Length: 374
Image: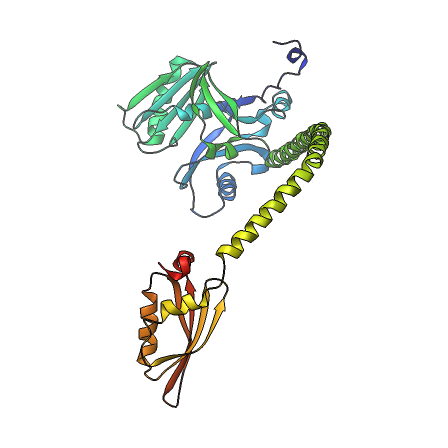
């Protein structure tokens, strides 16, 4: 660690994830109607299952991947004292302690049995389902395991010989950033908690959670605004220093340009003179050469009336033809000439047995070299 970085404040640890004791909750698997609001269906299910109204319960839910069912869990609020709930205010997530066990399941149908801290947790799994059919948590030791297994098999509709997976370690949840959570068995990483579960797994009051989310969004944007302001100030300072150095460099360049300006003016004058001489010697109008190149292909019925040059390479011919078919034949013959870049026929009019038309011709630059000799 350098002498500077040791004085920088260390990053704050992420908020803890608290696991409430699972034996305080009753758990049910409820069916859902696709397309209907999930939280409203969970609240309606709680009103039918619990002896207390939902506002007197700590409750949560975990939706199935297919959206057709959810695992709903709830506990009477008075089962948790003020010492427990005071710690909940700063937690990233508060959920029953059996939720981390849901990521550890048998390969097919079976039962997961977990024992820790004087409690037994049994989860009954039906093959092909991503949520258990039954979750039972009892206070007690190994002597109650057989009765608990019989109960969970009965409630899940499982056979007596299904696979039983026994677990004994401590399963924890930790915040993993981006709103996700990760399951650990002791210090061993097990699996991430499905993101679809994070919204409903928290058992705290919904209004409290909504206020926390709003505060989190506000703090996030305040922090980004502070970082943006600091970046703008740093950029302004950098530009200020850079502008001073650039000004010195610019003044030096301006002095160098001013010193070379007379030499550049002489070079420009010489170049302009050379270009003018080349233009006068090479770039001249050659209407007679143009007419000589297009005349051999002219049918006998076509008579030139007027020729006008359009620039150095353009020629406009006003002509008449006694035979209308000779107009198209003449245009096609001109298009075949290698010296012509384009041939256009326009304003074709027939009157009194005579067809008048205009040919717009564009010659290639190298087609008129040496007086039109190709």
